[in-house]
View 1 (cartoon, rainbow, N blue to C red):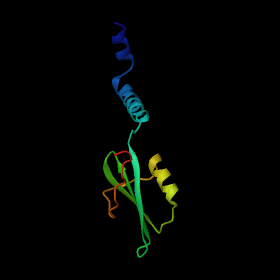
View 2 (cartoon, helix red, strand yellow; view 1 turned 30 degrees about the vertical axis):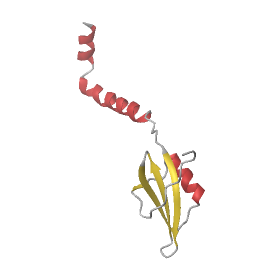
View 3 (cartoon, rainbow, N blue to C red; view 1 turned 90 degrees about the horizontal axis):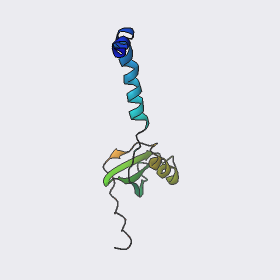
View 4 (tube, one colour; view 1 turned 180 degrees about the horizontal axis):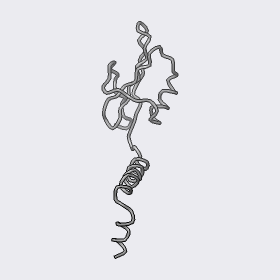
Length: 103
C-alpha cells in the first residue's frame, strides 16, 4: 500500500531523469582502466622534424607523433602512461621489439 502511495505522490517522469543520471555517474565514475602500456622506442625524422614514439598497449601497437619534437621523451612517456595523451593505432615507423630478459 505504501508503494502505491509513493507512485501517486511522485510521478515516474520526475524520478527517471535523476535516477538515470545517478546510475550513469556511478558507472562511469568508478571504472578504472587497467592496461599494460609499454614504451618500445622513439625515432626522430630530421627531414620532417617529427618524433615518433611507439608503444604497446595490451599487445597492440600504438603510436604518438610529436610534430616539431616539442616535448621531452620522459614527459611524453609519463603522460602516455598516465593516460593524458591519446595514442593512434599502428606504427608508422617500425622499431625492433625489445628482447625479454631471461629467455
